[in-house]
Structures are given as C-alpha cells and as structure tokens.
Amino acid sequence: MSYSFEVRRRIAAPVQDVWDTLIDHRGYKTWTPVLRSELEQVGTPDMNGVGALRALGVGPILAKELVVEFEPETFHMAYELVKGVPVRGYRADVYLTADGDDTELVWRGRFQSAPPGLAKVLNAFLRKVVADTAKGLDRHLTQR
Image (cartoon, rainbow, N blue to C red; front, top):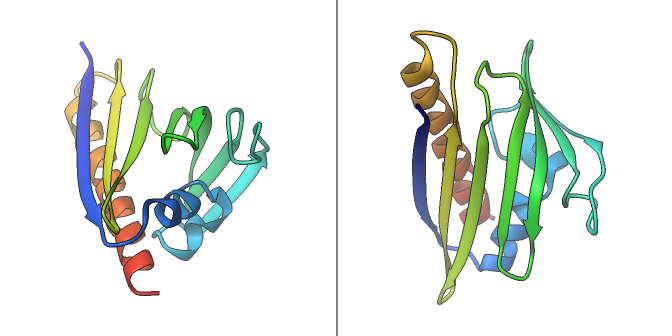
C-alpha cells in the first residue's frame, strides 16, 4: 500500500522569486520553523540541483533529503527523504507555475510504507510539514 498527499498554494510573487527561494536549501531556516538548514553535499549543474543533500532540523530531529530532479526551466524539483522520518520510499515533487504576477505551487508527496499503525499518522505529519513550509514560503515572499 502507498500513501500520498498534495498541497496547493497560490503565492503572490513571481515564479522566479518563488523558485529561487525554494531551491536555496541553506535559506530554509530564515522562513520555515526549522532551526537548522544546511547543504551537506552540492548538486549539479547548480549547487542546489541533482545530488544536493540538504539537512533540515528542529532540535534533535534532523531530516536529510536528496534532490533527485532539478528542472529550473520548468520550475520543478523532486527530492527523496533519506533520513529522519520512519517511512520508506518517500519522494516529493514540487511544481511551480506562473499565473500572471503570481505563482501556483503544487507539492506532492508519497511513500511506500511505514512502521505498522503509523502510516496514516506519518502521512498527516508530512502533509502538515509541507503545508506549513508552503505557508512560510508565501509569507516570506509577500512580506518582503
């Protein structure tokens, strides 16, 4: 069985600004609840691109995510969770689409399995983290 969620948000900022903020892995600590946001491994062809390994954390909780797709020309990025949440096969795809001066964000996450009895709870948790991240991105860009 697999689990998935989708978060959509309209952001009142140009798509390039949203993209530039979203891919700045080190900058997450300035606009999300995470206190630690580091780039542990650079990617290609951009340092935040394919192969980039980011570490995001609050207190003792640290998630590590590997960028597996990076398409600046279509404003699409995908990453896989490699550590930090007890799920298997987690992947998220983030799509940005220009809509006039605004941006439509679609963030889809899915995973294959979780410890017995925790899949629905972890799916809800991951959805909330993504929704809060999208909200923080919106607030950061519209309050500048």
